[in-house]
Image (cartoon, rainbow, N blue to C red; front, side):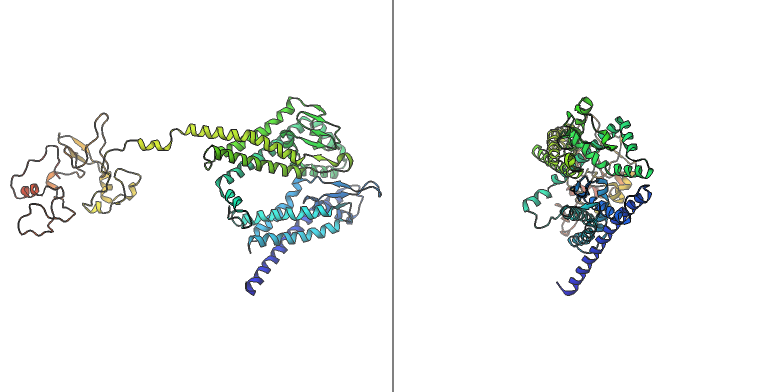
Length: 555
């Protein structure tokens, strides 16, 4: 690498670092403005501007998945952990890192991702150090694990999008066996089916939450009004509820899958029953929780969500044209089930966490239980469903394509005709006579087009008239009659219409002399094309030749 190349690469990496720092500053500034507006509009502010800035830095770190430590009720009390991350709030830093990496078109993808991540992480480290002295201090280990991972993943997706979303090649450090498997078409089918099934799970969970909120509308309204009397406080509660809507959708999906979610230490809500003593704080979204005790048929109806997710995975797997064979279909559907389970487990881990100490130390779905349930439902419903759909598509498709070879081909010359005129000379020698797909009308010679457009008639041996046909195409055969004989056979119709007097004897394109050529005739004298040179010569000299066949039409 030359010095100029190294300097150019360094400058590009530096530019990516600056862009990443700018993206982090933009997100931090946006949340700071929102928190400041809430503080200014609050009728009873208990802290000054410096405390508000500490809170804003803590909330920004929480948006990246960092666990916060809230100050205890007394100076001697231990800090209370807060680990439930509003997933809608997580979308802001992820989107900023994605856009920054996607728009940084200079340099290689790896350098762009590393530069954006380094610049963003530098700002995050400064914000974590600043938030340590506030009421919501970050856990430094959690910040070091979550913030760079979120930014790097989002930046990688942005760089991948900027390069046109390539499907390969994969890096060299990936094992060869894995690279071969990921390069197969069934890998793309499995990813699409898993994504569709995961979206169905989350969407079904959101629908369950919405139905339950409508059912418990009175309790939700009472919880909303009891949290604050001022309009600024109610707006803050409403914004927090909106930020937690994706979390509620994941909780609903976990509820429909069967494992449910924890409502404190020793309390679990499932479709079968709500066991334990739930430690539920007053909040509008939590008003949608089922009542304690055994579940009834409305709770059991939540099982429709995973069944529908498995059916969607089966549909995307069975309808894919790349899937062939029973074994291939089973492998693809099973891979889709595994990927869907991994995604459901990741969402469950991100949607839950502690809300405090003691009984609130466990809150939300357990990730490994949700992943196992998603794998079971998607595999049990998806694999047989994909096989049934494949069988149905094959049954509806009719006979195999090989049966088309048994269709009778209309009689006619199959070899290209020798050129006998200006129109035939322009004919494609590779075209097959009678095959309209290989000779489109727009590519026919001009003479053939004229013949096709003109309604010409020729006279057959019985005195009737018949329309002329396209050269190289056999005449239509009436129903119930035998196919017409090939050209040149007795009783056939000549391709060139016209009176016998206007016909010109055709010449042999081979250039050979006739068998009965008179003495003194050069060897290269053209002979008749039909091989009856002596008859044509005798007719031209006025002598009596053999009588023509009654079924033959003179040229």
